[in-house]
Image (cartoon, rainbow, N blue to C red; front, side):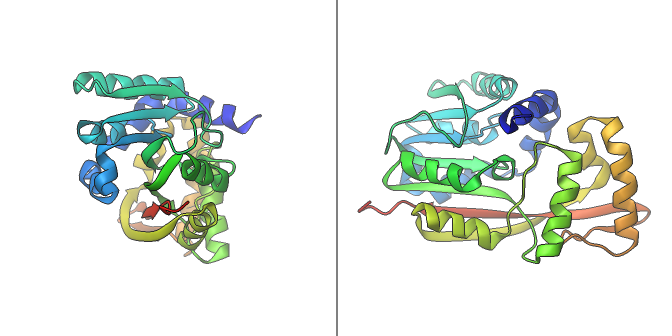
Length: 258
């Protein structure tokens, strides 16, 4: 199956449950993204792989305009409903592939993406496309869960994620994400990281597929009980499997002389 179709099929099915998770995962999303964007937050923005539009709606009140861009029509519908409810009139909704952005060079002052890089078949290309559509001096924000710098732990972590969600490609180690940004041409990188505790059944509920979940639950319990942390602290506490997701929030600037 074509990867983009796999993504759209999966998130068409996940639209409602993912929208609920996306809203509660970061209560300070508007402040976090707006502060990092600086003056660019008041210009023309694009939210790449916007999903249900949580970041879009948080940034729109201070932006001149913002495009909510996603491959999945159901996600764009969620984003539009969120923005309409908030009375936002400066948001445009467009469907397409993040690895081939249908926008001119230097069209935006700021570009953001959250919880999406691990679904891109070629994250380097997607990051390079965000670089291309930014004006010189423009700011990009990449926020995503990362995997361990240990290759074996990273492979195990990503294998578990793919079993749960076949549209998952690969959560990158932090150093690799930073490297991709530099290779695209970004400079002045600034990063923050934090861990968010997860509970297995809550994580499973987002994909909403009991037939898929049942065998993965057995595998993950076995891994946790055997001490295989997969770089995400996989363990059993009070009879429940718990783990964490390590987020990286990377600000990068397109050089003014580019």
